[in-house]
Length: 112
Length: 114
Image (cartoon, rainbow over all chains, first blue to last red; front, side, top):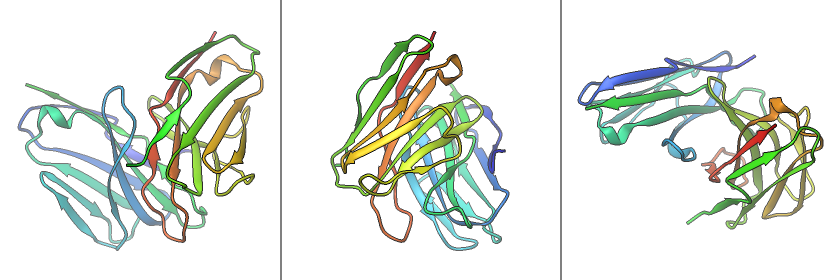
């Protein structure tokens, strides 16, 4: 079954509202990456977190890696229409070799 | 700037046909990957390759095969297409080395099997 789950699957927000997507793994991750896929586009790398408890910011986006390295979150402050898309987390599972396992994705829609 | 290209953006095939999806990257990356993307399931890894002529099964290899004769090219083959293989197929490449690095994706091929 799916080893990396994301919730929610869909989120509609009004422009200016905050948004958070959560990524949960059944096993420990050696790292976590986040990707954004615009409608009709392909996934584009946003960031990588490696250390337990790590927090990184990119303008209005805040990324966290859990202390146990089994979960992560992406928080967007004051969403804009340009934030529309699907956000995926991806990580290397412990014992999973040299490949990334992608999460199920969260589709974000932002309404004016 | 890394560029990953895929041979077709859209493809329509009939059940039982043999289908070839081609992927080319121009950054001399060792690792290449084929995923399929379906709503609610995210990206699922079909096959990957970490060197020329090397291949490894991903999470859902059944019904697919791959070929990597040259470093820059990674082909996905559907020996006998079936309707449940209708999906978006994404190719990706990544540099080699011990640590996981950024993956670069191609534009995707949307395959419809009738």
